[in-house]
Length: 116
Image (cartoon, rainbow, N blue to C red; front, side, top):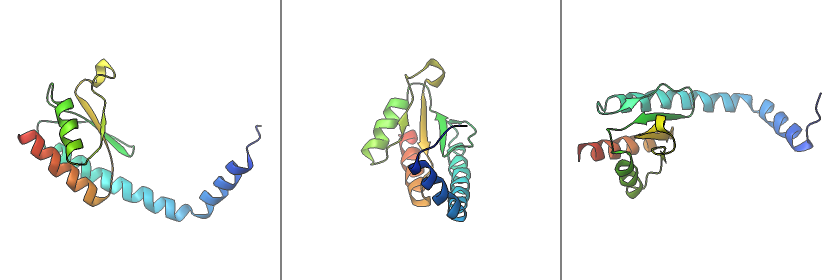
């Protein structure tokens, strides 16, 4: 019942014409998300929350989210610090699913920070 703009119409047509490509990308993100979640779960000091999105929320040991976030940033890895944004997200960080190399670099840096 609502009109949509020409730009929205063209965008929709483009997406439909390239649906196979977008499905392949979504499949790769799901596979990488599963591997990233498994890598996070292997770090026993974290609580990893289930995700169906392109990111994973995890809880760090109490009081460590800020230090871990800053350590990752110093290592050139930027994730989202949710600690302090709401009581339910205390000590929580959120990482976006990346490429296999990006995910491996993130997990290695995180493991190092948790050990130190």
